[in-house]
Amino acid sequence: MLVYDFKWSILWEEPYGGWLLSGVATTVKLGIICCFLSLLMGIIIGTFRITRNRPLRIFAEAYTEFFRDIPLLVQLFFWYFAMPTLLPEQTRIWMYQEIPNFEFWIVVVGLSLYSSSRMAEQIRAGINSISPDQLNAALSSGFSHYQAYRYIILPLAVRLVIPPLTTEALTVFKNTALAMTVGVLETTFMSQQVEAYTFHGLEATTAACIIYMIITLVVVGIMGLLEKKLAIPGLIIRKGAC
Image (tube, rainbow, N blue to C red; front, top):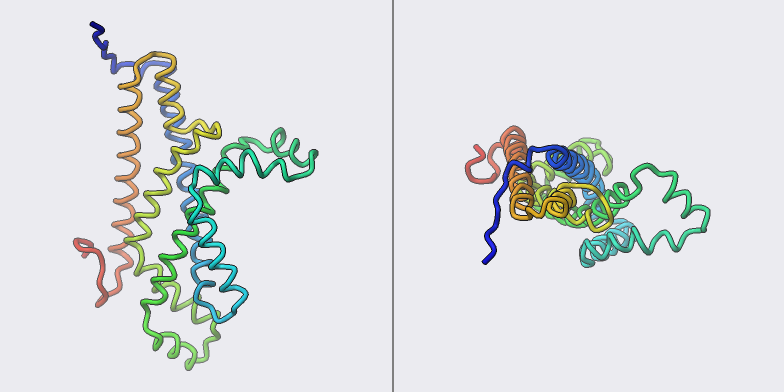
């Protein structure tokens, strides 16, 4: 009967500890960039979803449904394997050979598009929850529609939907694990690399689980502090945030 030989020390021995730290750094970098881009694009698309401009509204609806309904893994495969084949050969060669860390930026594109379609719906819900009187008051004060949304409606909407945006931010960081499928050396990839070299899969996988748990707890903590700081007096906020 085989007996598993536990060896937790591999998690900090070289080079395995260095591999895991490198993977964590890539995961955090990827998550932060994608969260920022997703929120930025989500605000734009979410605003387009309720605009009176019909072409913009149709574009936003199509964008949301397309990127939200297709599994993220399929989208990553498309951007990495299929999309380059649609480009001229010289452009394709330039992308693969001249763009540093090409796989990383492909994941940034795919994950940001996917996550922004989900965040856009949260932003749209936040805008719709604001009384039309807010917009009418701004317009009657001399604001243009653009100024009213930029200075009044959107700031209020984003503050109202911080709790669901927290969930989306967590999803972004957890979805970075799929980056390993296109060769990005993030936490999950590195944990599997450690397993392949040491045959200690339990330790390596446990380390990956703990790392993701720590990252998500940090994100929740930061978003909780942000929610407290930006809470709007008199409006419902997440329980325990005041």
